[in-house]
Length: 159
Image (cartoon, rainbow, N blue to C red; front, side, top):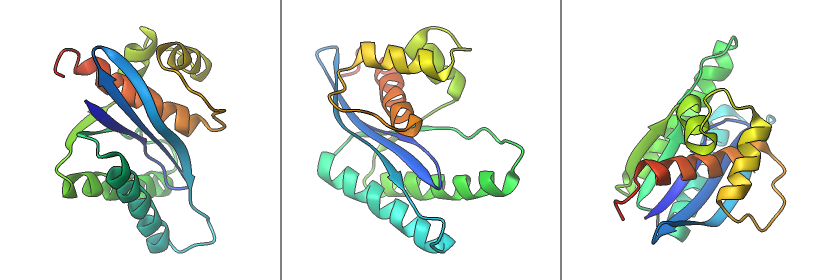
């Protein structure tokens, strides 16, 4: 099973692609895609959509796994992220990808076994669960990898 995992954002989008074969997860790709605040809202959405489309085209996943949104105090930011998330889901739908959505709590439990794990604990466990051959600079990218692992664990035994 090949999964594209997305940590949705507007300024930064974590993207990862993993594959599960014979019970083993392999990381095929990960990045943190960034858009510039100097660009218009619609241009940023278009760039995000193009990047998701590019990754889907290149890696041909079967499943799009994405984190659900937690609404914080800044509703304007939350709305922008929600709209960007819609673009991401749309790109997956165009390729008929199955959609799996996970809350931050579900991701923490799947990766660490503890729902109140902090970022560092999640990062340590992600590195133990899958081989990452490069330096990961942004939490968004590591979160996308964790989302892939959550989806893989949730579908244990399917493929």
